[in-house]
Structures are given as C-alpha cells and as structure tokens.
Image (cartoon, rainbow, N blue to C red; front, top):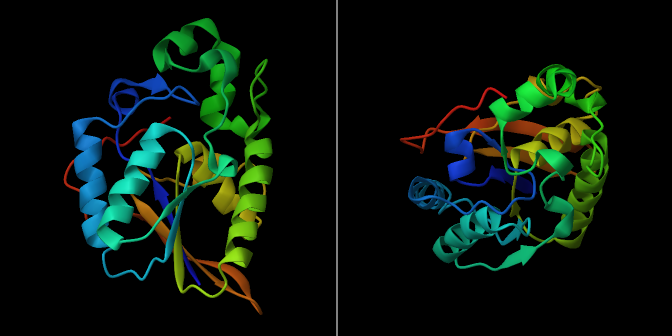
Length: 209
C-alpha cells in the first residue's frame, strides 16, 4: 500500500506567522489553489480513500482532492493538529517575546516542550502513529490511501513510523500542500519513498519555525 501524507493548503495563519494549533484557520485563496494543484498532481495516484483531521483547513484540502479522485473523505480525530494551549491563534513574534525560554525549546527541541493545557509532541506522535496503523490495517485491500493533516502531526508521525529518536522535529520538513509517500509491506513495514514533494506548486511560503 502507498500512503500519501499531505499537509493542508495555505491559510492566513501560515502567511502571517501565527501559531495555529487547533485554532480553525480556513484555507485562503492561495491555499485552495494549492489544493487544486495537488489534486491535479495526484489524479492518477490510485488513492482509494482519504482521511482528514477535523479542522477546516485539512478537511477542505481533502475535499478538493476527493472531488478530483471521486472518493470519500473520512474525518479522524487521531489526525487532528497538536493542541498548543495558550499559544494557539497568537503571533509567533508575540510568543517569542512573552515566553523566551519556551520559545527557544520550540525552535530547537520541541519534543521537550510542555505548555499548560497543551499536548506534547510525543503525545501527538503516539496518537497519530496508532491511528495510521489502524487505518492501514482497515484498508489492506486498497492500493493507496491519503492522510491530510498538519505539519505538527506529519513530523512526529513520520518520525514515529520510522522509529527516529528525538530530537527529530526539525529534521523533517513539509510545506503547505506538499505530499510525501510511505509504502507499507507486511513483511517489511513502512518505508519512506518520498518527502515534501512540491513540484506541483507555484506559490508557497517556507516556514522556518
């Protein structure tokens, strides 16, 4: 089975430097165009089912892809974005000023960051890996599936599936509306075949942190 790991299209939060978390930033017009270009790039991929996190930016990206492929979208809470607690919906530069020690952890080793009322990166890894393994098992008859989710889910998910030890977060990069490909074989497990494909895109912002 091929598993297409897709980051949602661009939002105002990406373009203007916000911590998003579970704040429901919708796709902007460029994000919708990115999703359309993604759908065109994957029209012959053989994807038979699409899973999406519940936030609108992931769901709309998934729905644009699903319309092109003629398949259904299933929402999975296990692919929801990280809960960033008090940082959600706030400018990164504000957080940098108000929480300098915690922000330094975010840009170096976010695996160690613990915020009040928030998830840790390692907790995201645990739930995302568990969810991916379950949906792969449930769809073993299909040749390909897709998962549309968020940067802070894809990074720990890839690390967890490949058993990459911390610190791993900043060793993997995924842009908006990019796709990566895992292959799964019962006798071999998961293999990363492609990371952060963006050749189909014309306009995207590279987020450094």
